[in-house]
Amino acid sequence: MSTGSNTTQTDIRPALAAGFSAYLLWGLSPLFFHLLDFAGAVEIILHRVIWAVPLLLTVLAISGKIKAAFTAIRDPRTLLTLLATSALISVNWWGFIFAVNTGHVLQASLGYYINPLMSVAVGVLILREPLGPHRIGAIVLAALGVMNQVLTVGEVPWLSLLLATSFTAYGYLRKVAAVDGRIGLFWETVFILPIAVIGLTIINANGQGHFHESPVQALLLMASGLVTVVPLLLYTIGVRGLHLSTMGLLQFLAPSLQFIIGVAGGEPFALGNLLTFALIWGGVALFAWSTLRRNLKPVVSPPE
Figure 1 (cartoon, rainbow, N blue to C red):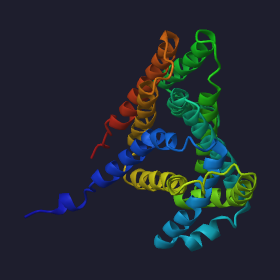
Figure 2: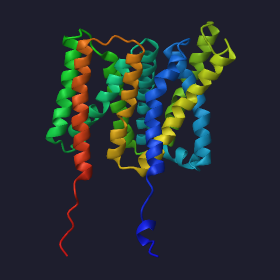
Figure 3: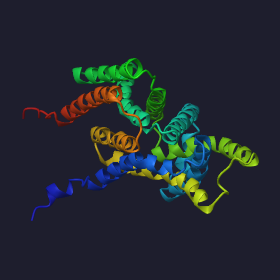
Figure 4: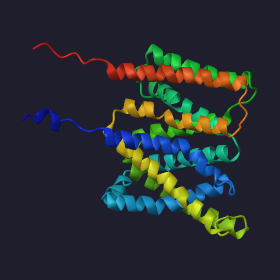
């Protein structure tokens, strides 16, 4: 019995399940943050940081990454980069929670549809990555979608742009830093931790905190740490076992679920909004097609 061909094959199903689950949880996260509408976006983020730190420290200890985590920040450039990504992810978290708690989940969805297209533009302009006609079309359609939202609907989708630009910049800097995802998020939350402790102390001293109002509210605020850490760990498993192009296509699951949640929640969705999303979806389709073409392009073997 020959087993040679089978032993060299890697079962991608666990990685695929992990990657799918990560984007599924990110897509469904508005349902969780709706449960936290008793608190403001700032208070939620502060709790998110406080409860994420011990979870991430535990993860690093279990995976044997504690020493690597402290070695990583000895490099001044890595330290400064993680300080910058810490600020960017804080802005992104605030924008998303603010969007959910103020009934603008559709804007959050739009922002995360725009994000990969904006990342392509950054890759071309800064990293000098190649840009084919399909990706040019994708960026143009995304730009037209934003212009339509401004001219036809009469509003600047500032939350969408805030989420897209902050996460695009975050992704670029994390790519430059080349730090393990768990280590990077650990330091990003640790850097914010003193601010979180001081901020919650002030909020509670002024009688505006919600942690002590009921056990249910306390548990929900503590669970925000899990909602931060678990999808990232699943994403890390997925990205290690799958092609980046596969993860790139899976990422559209999250904004699609957010879109469904926003529409089902009764958020305004007129003809002008539909045209905005149609243009963005067209850009996403071109981006997906371009990614699939590159991934499925046959490799020509050299002549023997």
